[in-house]
Amino acid sequence: MTDAAKLRQKAEDQLKNQQSFKKTTLTEQELIKIIQELEIYQVELEMQNDELVTAKEKAELAEEKYSELYDFAPSGYISLTKDGRIVELNFVAARMLGTERSKIINKNFALFLPRNTLSDFNLFLKNIYTLQVKQTCELIIETEGNLPMYVTIDGIVSRNKEICLLTLIDITKRKVTENLLIEAKERAEESDRLKSAFLANMSHEIRTPMNGILGFAELLKEPKLNGEKQKKYIGIIEKSGALMLNTINNLIDISRIEAHLMKVEMRNSNINEQIEYIHTFFEPEANAKKIDLSFINSLPSHEAIIKTDREKVYAILTNLVKNAIKYSNKGSITFGYVKKGNELEFFVRDTGIGIPKDRQEVIFERFIQADNDNIKTVQGAGLGLAITKAFLEMLEGKIWVESEEGIGSTFYFTLPYNVDPEVKKLAEIVVSNVGPLNQVNPITPNLKILIAEDDEISGKLISIYLEEFCNVVFKATTGNDAVEICRTNPDLDLILMDIQMPGLNGYESTMQIRQFNKDVIIIAQTAFSLKGDQEKAITCGCNDYISKPINKAKLHSLIQKYFKQCFN
Ligand code: ADP
Image (tube, rainbow, N blue to C red; front, side, top):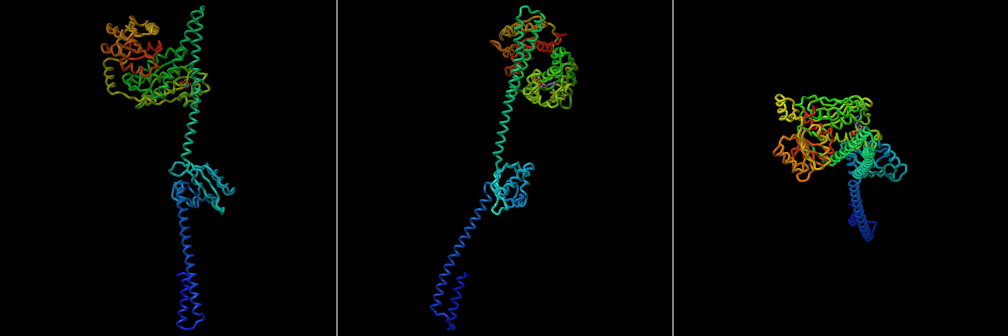
């Protein structure tokens, strides 16, 4: 019952008493008036009461709204004491700190920050209280099991100056994007720097031999030049041409690797034969520097046939042996392999200048030498080892170096020992019945050779290269002629087949010849720069290939491989 109702009740009770006992101090009129006034008073009180109820309801609603806003705001809100203790926080902040609200209350906010940022945070907190204006900072929140979160934090002190309120906004996405952009920019700058250095180095690599070729060709014109000088100048021109060709071949390889155009052709290859071939090829170059070049084949030939990409293994060994000679001025170079478990471990050991410890890893990176200050002291574009490493990755092998400055280097690489069981069985039968596997061809001391070549100068060059160990040379300038000569001379031993010829090209001619003559050895002469030439030549029936410009020693080694007796 309200107060007004109680008063009214009291007045009415008094009136009733007065009527029943007939003794009163107030007249009836007066009492009625009081009652009327009381009624008005009661109405007023009730109205006030309604207003109070409405105001209370409004206040409750506002509080609810505020709680909702506080709890579900897009930002995190945390109230901290001066020493960083968490007094209150909303759901978003709790989520940012990676656990429930109840578990965070009273913990120190610093627990969620990396150690190295604590001093920044402490200064930020101190400034909020001392300067009493809004402070802002960026921090990383680290919580167990979660990725680090980048946050912007605004902080203000409360009215009573006892608490400060922090507003946290998650800026991880922005930060990650920013970091990616910075990384991309740095990478672009780095690659631009390497590209410029690489171009400068390439220019050096091409201009230097070009200088030799043009300069000494000019000197050769001198009419009074004696024979000895002539020979010397021609030697320099030859060497410069070979250097330039090597640079160009490396460039083509690296661009094919970068463009993912380099394919792997797995075939059965005799590793011993490859090692012997490389030894024969490089021996004169090593001897010219008075370096002893030797090899160790640790498996018998019939066990040395593995399934791999022969050309890539050849390129890898060539690069390493070439470098060993290039970076040695004395002593010896030994190369070979040993079988270790399911792998063959190859080595190329030299007693050359060695490699400083801090460069032993970077030398395998492409273009890296272009960025090296020492570049001008040695010949080379710094691509050989990058190509070697890329080839080994394609063949599931790995490469490393052990080296000491002034003592020498040993480059190691591995290849899986993939042996085709059929080949192994066959090889064992051949070994027990016929003799060593590498004597696959009949002994042919004086070869009958066909040179298929439409370019007159190239044809002449090959016939000069071959004249010392052939008795009959046929020449064809078209593919059709080549097929015809081969048909009418079934005892031909060897065909040097150009690929780009008028009429039937080298591939088509080889395919036609293979229909009636499976025995003749066909070596394709391919323009190395044309993608897929080599692979295609083998697929069409050629036994081997040699890239143009043709290197005499390489051609001889190739012929020796198929007709060993010619060189005895
Ligand atoms: P380059 O064309 O410069 O020889 P490579 O990629 O083949 O390029 O080699 C990279 C660098 O590694 C060389 O410039 C040289 O400094 C070093 N290097 C490679 N092989 C040897 C070695 N056998 N002895 C000493 N240094 C070597």
